[in-house]
Image (cartoon, rainbow over all chains, first blue to last red; front, side):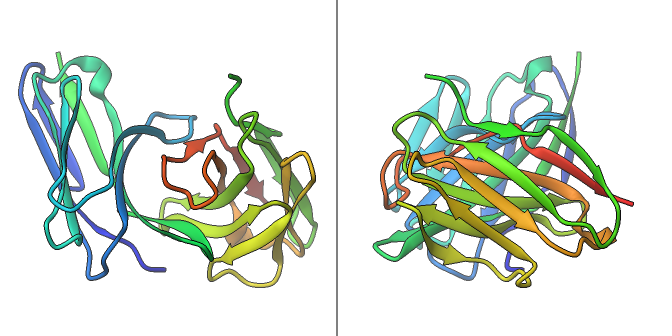
Length: 113
Length: 114
């Protein structure tokens, strides 16, 4: 099935470092979402972006909705051990006929204390 | 508010059997979607329900079906199970019918087909 191109696939960083990951698509989306998933759990919403060019922060997380509506990035500043997990981008197409999410492949983040 | 509740958490079935998974959305959420997560294919959209009607369907065979009840609870059914159906099945609910506002996912049902 269609997926977004998310990179990098994995990252190994030291505590305190900043992290950046991004997603690109050949399709336009109404909304970009960033989720984090930990083992044995479902994805948890981190940030939702609704307008092209929008830049939104949630604590140490910052994400942007690309101007072309085909890409988005997520930055995590000053990483801590609890940031470990898999981060997914998702593009949402929504309208009167329904809604669905298309997910990226995920970025596995490892933070070394 | 209680979160999205999925039951059971774990399930082991034999090839050829059928299975039914259940999802209770957040109170007040009328829209429910189902996703399949596997290591090879990632997160794939199965279907979406709103007010007991299927509004949207992904590219899965007819063995995968679902329904939604008047209280917004949803079930999905997989008939004639295959080994490749082993996956984490995730349910998500959201408050606004169009889906804007973000999806809240349950913890999933881990299905293993042997």
